[in-house]
Image 1 (cartoon, rainbow over the protein chains, first blue to last red):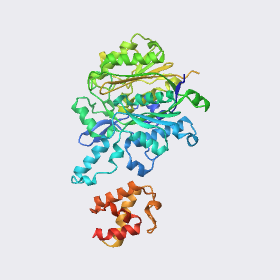
Image 2 (image 1 turned 180 degrees about the vertical axis):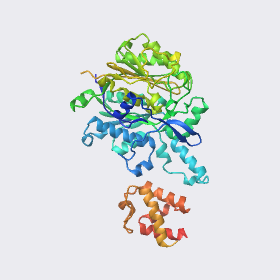
Image 3 (image 1 turned 30 degrees about the vertical axis):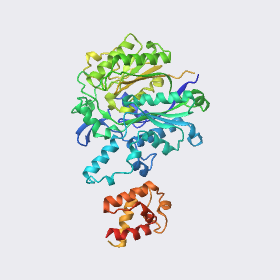
Image 4 (image 1 turned 180 degrees about the horizontal axis):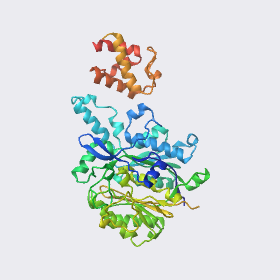
Length: 409
Length: 81
């Protein structure tokens, strides 16, 4: 049976534009959250990326496309370069692009409606002909295929905030099926550019706020008050092990297990029982015992109920493991929505090599209901890491758990 | 507007649409499509900008009048009046 490995990483996060910067930020307590002025909403904490949009894309195609597409193009190029693949010589028809998204099209639609009301006096003949290609849900993946002349399958996976993990799971499956030989997979989000998502979380009482924006995203803190919305992207190159070995590629890790399931209980509230089932099924697929997991990266968005429910689930699965340590990433970067699963996995991947677990951003007042054993809080922890379980959950009750292991020949 | 003023207005639009291309030395008699690597979406952008900025409508059957800078000026000058 084939094995699937990660051979390259390209990312942009509110606190770093490549893996090395991002990892350093997570180890040195560097936040990427700032106060931003959001149309109709006002000043609000958010995570915005500052990668160079024109490093791999012309101005004209950027104007024609979307922020999500531009983010994906940047991450995809960076991942391919990092992988060391001779891209020009590679068979583009055997490459796949699989990107998880929370949503797509809100940013572009809101902009058109804004222009229609404010600049175009409701004249719909001025509605942009670019609207449709910008808002089709495959846009971020399609823009990568167009830009890089990849002729294999390129599509997105709509999976709410489990999107990043789901992109990787899809790629794993396609590689195992033999449908492609090389995959660009992960998650992308441009959500920070739509006021609707801020307004909706605010209406729900779930928008993270604080006078100091760096304290607005406080997963597991007793005083947490909601989600900080961020943008970002992380794309990995994935290959079957034999292909990676043949070309002498650097191997970051191996995908050894995953599971996805559905709560089937509520539109927005998570369900700890289903989360437990999801993590346990991922362990079973990986043929690992819960004690074999060295690090669990929580989804932990900073909502009062969501964090508590996930802590119940994580505690239930790993509470009796002395070996398993827990961290979460959103205190540093907010919730990067469709990118979250992939980006947060990227932040932990170097642990296989450097034997360090990055901490949660310092939790000053740990919620007693979130008082997990072996929570890595505020300071990095030296520990050999062989297996990481990465949680990502989303609205409408989608759960995903992905297990990545240190590559052993 | 004079033909020179019309030409300037058209070049401004073309520059905003072409973005990456240098429009300062366009051969006015050459095909814009070839010279500036414009495609059909770009021509739709030019038509849209004419409408937004100057309230000029170009019917679809007359798009071919926009083939070169010279033909644009000749075709659009009466519409700018």
